[in-house]
Image (tube, rainbow, N blue to C red; front, top):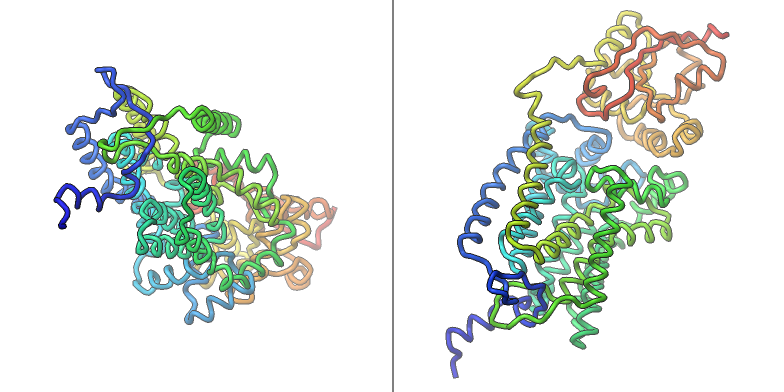
Length: 549
């Protein structure tokens, strides 16, 4: 017998629609059934549609206004190799530490030509738009478009947007594939969606090695299904195995990273670094952000412990949170703890960039919290979120409407070096590579980085930057030398310093009895370069090794 039209629609509905548990939004009539007015839905969807081109404009503007920084330049250097085998060679020798996936994507982008600030960042821009759209759709089916708009919009004030929506690194692409896996997961009872789920996990692991940690929320959700429904979904568990296969292919890259940089990695997994990393997610003070994180975690645990959600009627389609949704939310939200534990066990690192997947948990947890509020409160929180975004972007556009002449601080030492015909040493490796990347051939011939891993380790607690530049000199024409080799040939030179903890040479020379003389000092109004962090100083020293105290 042929099914009726209503039966056909029911059988084709996503699995998330049936058997959900819901946090009821209270209505004025006192009932538990969620009340969403059609006008509210239409307005929220329209606002989200308008938001997309705004985000595109903002990310393109941010990309154009920022030069490539140290890590992005590594992306460009590796992905621009003439052959794919060259990329593999650089990665297996430790020039950069991500799987091949990102570099293959950026290799395609590089062949398009054009402004490198845009071309190499387009994948991250597209990835962020994918994340926002997927999160809006995922949350809308559970809480309606208004809450989805606010919760997905909250991503705009998290680090998944700034800086990773316009940075030529793999973090945005990794999160995009994890978000796509989330969309596939809720339909994973279907074989096709189960296969797509596995492919998305594999793609995420091909972008960044930490992507495997994002298997945790899905595993927690599957254990919830196994416990509550007594169902073992082979296609999902098989998806975890398939998703981890890239690690077998890219193990030589990971091994090279551990051998070269594992001993004194820059992001050691300490409790303090974990707290700072949580703060980096929202750009708040460490203590304040950690307190908010703890309060939100207590809220989620209380929800689970008290079971303060009730079964909704099956007639209500697309609204409500299942126990699986709660498990996913908790799993993504506690990713800082999961990452910290994994880093301690595997001798990895903990940083805000490695915790970016937590932003998905923040968005889901926010939607869960908003689903318990009245509409005016939801609107108020939404206005606050978008005002924060507007303020954040206004600070970036300020220089457009009130342009200032920002002095190129490398111009003066470059001219001094040329006039005196002596080398220019850039003391900080994080500054050296961006300066070298955009320098003329004439300046590159005089530009030098002095490498001493032990001194950098003693000064900053990490030797990662120095070791990386020492490795890079075998594959790119960077001028990286030891102090002893350099000093045998050059007794007189300039040092360009910004006073950072990695800026070791002015301090070292003073300790050794030399007399570096300050010939130029500026306190920059902005950054030392357009593509660097705000420094405390911009100083040029003249050093004569034949003059000692």
